[in-house]
Image (cartoon, rainbow over all chains, first blue to last red; front, side, top):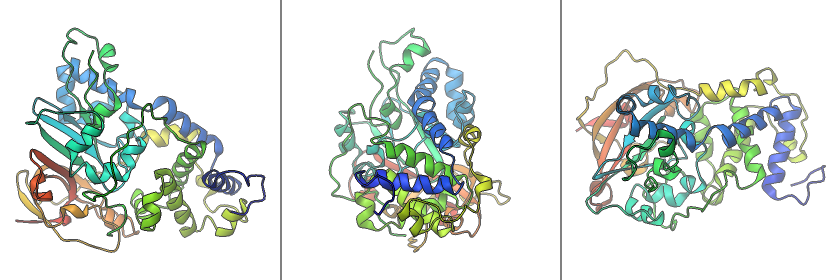
Length: 199
Length: 217
């Protein structure tokens, strides 16, 4: 790509992105400080710790779990997690014999407010193509093996409903606080490709 | 459209490759791309549906080899050009030739938190009652428009059971092409895995489908 700055040794995407940002800033359409603030938000504030706090609270407060099941958007927003790609939430509770797995076969829909930005594999053709057809095979690639008699429910995020899996609370955590429990709730367990960590 | 994005059930992409301790971004440009895409969305030219459709119309061979941030950026450039805010010459030279038309709507740094926290709810009140109560069996229509649709191809023709009514929601097929929101009832519909794929014990797949995507059985 022709350039008049000294970027000729930059890789193609770095050069393209830099050129686009420069043009848009010069046009007054984009504020570089706003870009920084967005990066900052998703790097530090909005991520899977939010979802883990929701899950841990559901594990420890039956009333909250009931609210989450009934109206996840309201229950989650009561904890301060609102906004882009979390406007319409539903919580999916794993149980003995029932395991939920979330995908977006058509693009990359993902509950940003509780999980942050999606990982690369979630947006990639292997996951998007196979999770609806062969979820057990996909789970094995994550090292997750379920009992044979488990019903697997795959949720294809085709509209603006966003899904948060509530994994089962691990055994051996009786009496733990919500803060302690949240540390066991890994991101993938809230997508459904993993289980919560063992204590 | 039967585009490269409609991946459910396709074969041959190989194993999923989860990355140990995956970084949030794999390159600096990805961070900037995320920010640029969100800032440009705030200009108000396009809906999320138009932006999805712009991604779907990327040529198959590019879509399948591009990283997702590259897909975003490629579609963004198309959208900016379509709406008269960017020329190919400007992008090639790396400098603006004209001022932006909607500079007054530029997302300021102070506006970021509000925009992200507000999001863009798509629920809309509807006067008509939903046609299909929970528990109704419905068949997915064989819809293959050349424009935008949020019906995965693998569901066409299959019978599912309405599991939940999600209320009225903006209809993406029209909203993507500036034909208005035309909200419809949205349903979560459950399909049997063995019916979809010819095999698949103890598997069911759910999708959120608009009323006009299905018919009564």
